[in-house]
Length: 274
Image (cartoon, rainbow, N blue to C red):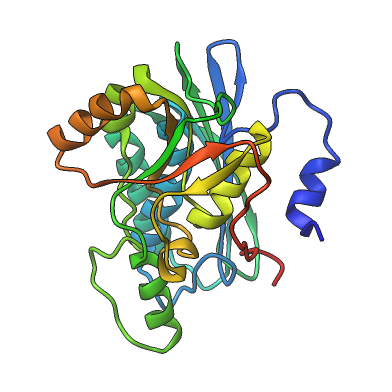
């Protein structure tokens, strides 16, 4: 059965829906929410960490599509218990993170609320965006980095333990340089936000293909959401070129499947409305 998130999206008819960002000419528009008690608990993170992660997960949509972020709009629901110093810490963190990626917060909205909720819109530019659609039979599927840390550390937090300040759960690493250099060889791609299993299914669904597994994936890897590594597709003949790009950046690259004319899918657990 289709989950409520995908059901809602299916009710919208715009031709621009389907990628990490909507591509209109050379401009890309993307938006993600970062809500207290849905995506994080305030006792887990400082205001600096919350602001930074909220901005990074939104910038990831632009990075994943080979786009340069330009402008940011931020809506924040502010609980009454936040002090002016808390607000300063939050906004400073968001502004600093945006500037690291060459973009500027130019407006938004603030409302009162019982919990700290952030909704961020990124406006980007790209002359050659990387879309989800474009896979062909025989293409290889691969992911960057090492997956599993985010899920592992989230479980640690739920159990009341502390995790490293540099944990991927706090500090996603965006692969902008890899995407920029590898873009000429890529046929499709997206960031891994809902886990390798679910996001591979999304990529296959929009291209109407299945896959043959080339490397076994364990559930700790496949179900680890909020990794923000890259899931990419490319022709076999370009494997060596892409491996060279990854090696030049000291970035692990794992080829795990071949795109095929079947209906194979990974098991997928929705991260929302559970």
